[in-house]
Length: 106
Ligand SMILES: [Zn+2]
Image 1 (cartoon, rainbow, N blue to C red):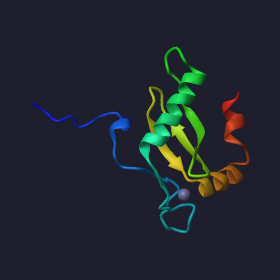
Image 2: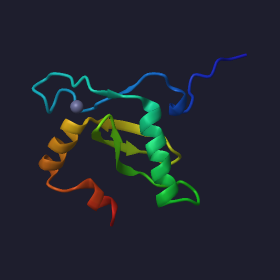
Image 3: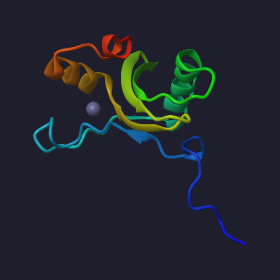
């Protein structure tokens, strides 16, 4: 009998940490975190809206948590890889010069 090494992200108890650590903040890690379940629930709602048939869809999406708008990258099937806290989300948007929501709408 084996314990499962890999589960869905929804089973994870650890929060997702803002991935904007290091290269945007002079080497300091960003300590902002959001519960994985919050990001995953938001992505699953997005998936149902964008591709209700098979969930085969990935891309950046925004979600609100504790009064801020976070950015995350969702994978097909409902997993989430990487989150940006509200501060780094706006920093990233300014750096890239576009609104990810507009990019998603193509
Ligand atoms: Zn951050």
